[in-house]
Image (tube, rainbow, N blue to C red; front, top):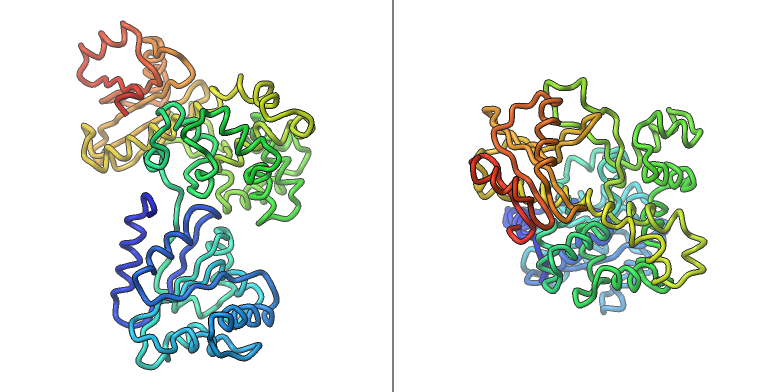
Length: 453
């Protein structure tokens, strides 16, 4: 059973039920759950699966044929792809689903593969087939694939991007976690189900990080570096840029002064990191107070890469010398609260989006974002088509949200030149007495603690 993929399964089912053959590209980052999704989709259907390898064109055909021969299929040593497809359909009466995992490995080594696949799907006599081409190479699919496969791209029926799951799905996966533990875990692992299986909801955050990440034998120990190295060359340059962003160099000019790289070079490397969804460029919500908003801010958007470059990368020597517990106590414990605060804001935004879908907000929001000011930030702005506005801030690193935090939000709204109709205040714990009294008096002020979420 998989969590949170009902819409993806519905999408695949809709194409499967269409008459004729289809070719769909299904992509998303490694460990996000693509293979599990596709295998669940195909479990009650006539289905064939192949995990492609990285190799030459000839090696691809040899390995695929070898796999099928072990299953009793009669094939030559180096068959054409059309022969492989015919062999996969042999004896099947129903519409057949053929899943080719990491298909970019084949396309990169053989420019003719997609032409053969398209020709076969069009000419397969008396047989309907659904090709599901899966890839973990997001940047390649979105930016290079069409140029590589040429006119074969016109035959693709659809694209399905498998995205990270949201926080509430992770909490279903970890029923033993408190909300606080869940948000801490989400801040480290993100919405990647393949990472979740390394944590145990019977343990606390410290124990899980020590056991599943800081331990040298753990699968996630070098995962942050692997994510960067798998798709990119010149990793030393990328590591420098990522470490600089973590160190607070969020603007292009700051990165230029800190790294010594040219602005043009940094821009190209940032573009590559954004294509891989490792870095994002923050666009502040468009308001009349543009002069008070920050522009050109870069953040690491991949949770696990952010955690790795915040704590492990700058302390690799200590990581080798210390026990996991010693390393956690010295380098992680004191700063974790502040680190998690950024992800608490993401979780709160997800709840606003969910409430909006369920019509549980006082407005129907058309746009939801954040305003990044030069003096302060409005964590959440939700606005209807008519201009009705919800503004919100999120307090994670304080035991109590105070009236002064509410006044600070009003100050930021003034700088943003934003007319606010409703205010949502999110707090990990509770609110001071003055805020509680204010909320009772003002119907447009809503206080939300973690227990309510």
